[in-house]
Length: 84
Image 1 (cartoon, rainbow, N blue to C red):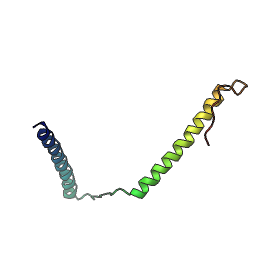
Image 2 (tube, rainbow, N blue to C red):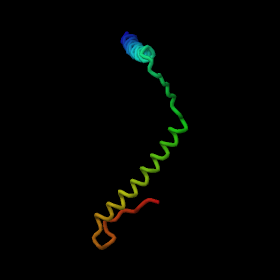
Image 3 (cartoon, rainbow, N blue to C red):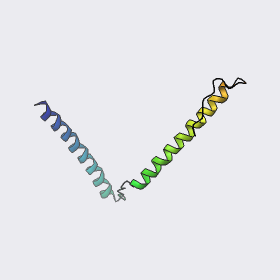
Image 4 (cartoon, rainbow, N blue to C red):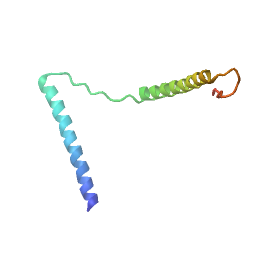
């Protein structure tokens, strides 16, 4: 019984969201505005994700270097290994 109520609620929210998007689209068409539907580019998303990962690795290395500089006391104590 509770499953039916949850499913009906989810579909109700989905229907209302679809109606809202449809009304927004219709208002733009009626006003004569350009309606541009952008489809996601999976290749671009993968490349951006790879660049983000590489940037994070570099930033992690720089954080370790900065921490090593802060902890430097003339000896090798309290120094962390920098990953390659």
